[in-house]
Image 1 (cartoon, rainbow, N blue to C red):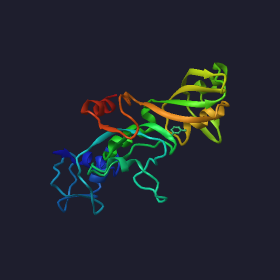
Image 2 (image 1 turned 90 degrees about the vertical axis):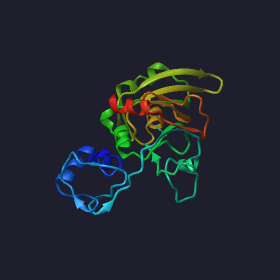
Image 3 (image 1 turned 120 degrees about the horizontal axis):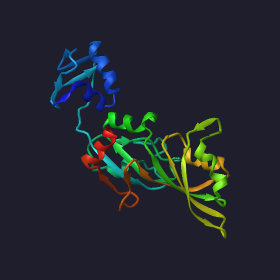
Image 4 (image 1 turned 30 degrees about the vertical axis):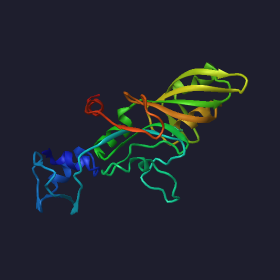
Length: 236
Ligand code: URA
C-alpha cells in the first residue's frame, strides 16, 4: 500500500506536493469515488483517476544502461532510428530515459517508469553531478579551460561552473582527452562548453551520474539498480 500522492507522483503526473493539491481540490478518484484525504493509502488493485484519467500503477523499475553511440535517447523515433528502449524488449514496464544523451554520445543513461525519480534527478536545484570524458580537437591547456570553472555564456545559453581535468594530450594528432563534471543537463552542454573554450568535441562519453558508474557494462548492456542505489538519490 502506498500513499495516494506518492502513487500519482510515481506515475509521472506531477510532483508529490502538487499531487496533494490535486487531492485537496477533489480532482482525484479512487475506485470511482473522490478522495480528499491526504493520508489515503491505495494498493496496485485500486483504480486511481486524476481529472477522470486512470493512471497506471506499474511497480517502479530502475535501470542503468550503457548507451552506445548512434542511438536516440527516446522511446520512439519518427525516422525509425534505433532508440534506447530497443535494448529493453524483455522489460514489460513502460520505461523511458531520464534526461538524454545526444545521438552520438555514449555512456551512462538511466531509465525508469518512476516519474518522481525522474523529476528528482533532472531538477536543476538538486545539482546531481555528471562526469563526461571528451576527445577534443586541439591542445588542451589549463589557462584555456579555466573559464569553465567560473561558468560561461555561449550561443545565448548560460552554463554553471564546471570542474575539468586534462587526462591526456596528443601533440601529433593535436587532440586531447578532457574530463568535465557538470551538474546541469542543458542541450549539448558539454559540447558547447568545450567549443566555447576552443576545443570542439569529436567524441563524448558519460562515465558517471551521481554515485553511479558504468562498472563492467559494455555498450548496449544494462543492469537493474539496487534498491540502495535508488534510495541514495532520495536521501542525498
Ligand atoms: N553534453 C553534450 O554535449 N551532449 C550530451 O549528450 C550530453 C552532455
